[in-house]
Every structure is written in C-alpha cells, then in structure tokens.
Length: 315
Ligand SMILES: [Zn+2]
Image (cartoon, rainbow, N blue to C red; front, side, top):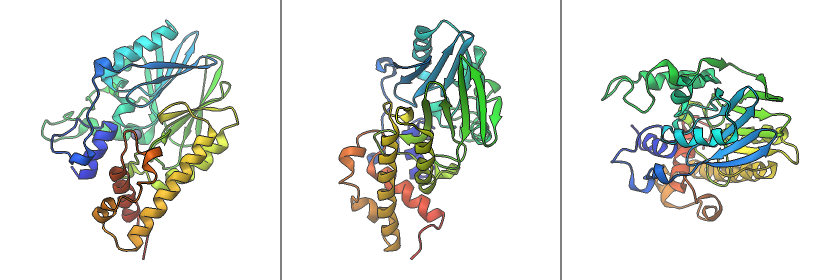
C-alpha cells in the first residue's frame, strides 16, 4: 500500500491504521465509548447526526426512516439510539453517498434489520471489490465484511432519482466526478436541505479519492453546481463538519482554487512532491483550514499526485 493509500486509510478509515504509517500522517482512532452522536434538528422531519465519521442525514416519517450514510460500525448502537430518540419507526432505507468506510460501515447492521441500501453504481462496485479483496487474510480481510447485507441493493446510474417519503421529495443526484466518481448528493426539497457527502467538507481541507475517479478540478467545478442548488436559506449537511450554507461552499471553492494554483506552480517549476511538502506552502491557510482530520502534507500529496497523474499541468 502506498504512503498515500495508508494516509487515506487513516483519514477516511478505509482500513485499520497500520503501525508503519508515516508519522506526520498518523491519525489515531477515537475512543469509541467516549464519542458522542449529536442530533441537529433541521425541521420538516430532517435531522443531521454528527459524530466522528461522515455526517448522517435522517428523514423521519410516519412509515419509517431514511438515512443518508451510516457511519463507522463502532458507532452503530449510538446512531440507532439517536434515531430512536427521533422516532420509534424502523430504518427502511440507507443511502450511501460514496464507498468510504466512515460513511458505509453501518450498512450491514441496518440491512440485517431490514433496510434497503441504495448507492451509485460505482459505489456498489467499490464496496463489492473491497469485500472480495484477497490478501493476507483472504477475502474480507479488510474492514468491509463479505456478505450481501453490507452491499447496496439498488443503484443509481446517472442523473436524478426521486423518493417520496414523509411528505418530502428526496432527490438522489449523481454528481460528476468530484470526491470519487460515484458521489451522490441528496436534496430534501421541501425541507430545503442539501446533503453533499464528501464532495464538501465544511471548515477543513478535503480528502480527494483520485484513485477512484475523484479530482481537485472536479471538486472545484462541482461547487458551482452545489451553489446553484442552494437558496439563501438552504442548510447544507457536509460530509464532515457542522451544518453550512451556500456562502461556505463559495469560500471552500476559493480555498481549493488557491491550493490547486500553488501545487500546479510547483509542478511547473519542476519541484518534487517531497520538496513541495517540505516548503510548507499552505502555512497561511492552515490556521483556518488545517485544524481537523486532513493536514497540509496529506492534501499537498493528493493534489500533487492527482494533477501529475492526469497530466493536467505541463511545463
Ligand atoms: Zn469520503
């Protein structure tokens, strides 16, 4: 596994933290017992559950519950308790915004209780590929447990699909390649809430999974679409971080444009990735954006390798 892959595993929890991870990228998992799941009521039956992993959107209705994303499995009891605090109805649908473990780790637990898992076609493929991975421990050696319960059963290919639940129109919108090439964003139309998955991290540097079709250019371009989906009062549930509005989306796009500009300039000047990281080119941005899961060396590495791998920057 590459240094970058190790770092991604630590950031998004795709794998358990290996002991030989680069020290500057090492990230410890939390004390699960001490990690709270906090309920934010956004009105119209829509809630956001905020904890260590990806934010969860909840739509509670008379006949059951729709969840958007499913958190780490270690938090499943607390997520279920938070949902039960909102409504006694069962979880009937779980939408996966993308394949990363901190968003889909709870799939199996909800599926065993009868929920239908929904994702993009790409997310389905990536989850099944992880389930089938052979390696030191054989199939299922990673955290993605083998078995139908953990994989989506209904997939969205492209465009927009709608669910009609609890008096809400729930749009599942297949984004163009951004964080991955299989991102779904979810719009609760009547509640005026937009859930972005990891196409948007509110308040700190992003992860970009360019090995699964994501790119910084795709992220930057997609903020125009996300902004256009928002009105002045739209509440945005980001992949990570607190509830946001459309101005945070604009600000985030500006930050990523600046990061891209600096990394592209370094590549054009012939600088190596190691020299770029050592030059600390984002120190002025760190006080605002560098204080959470994703640190400057990791972001520089993924943007450098993304731009290089796609041949987007030439001398
Ligand atoms: Zn992610």
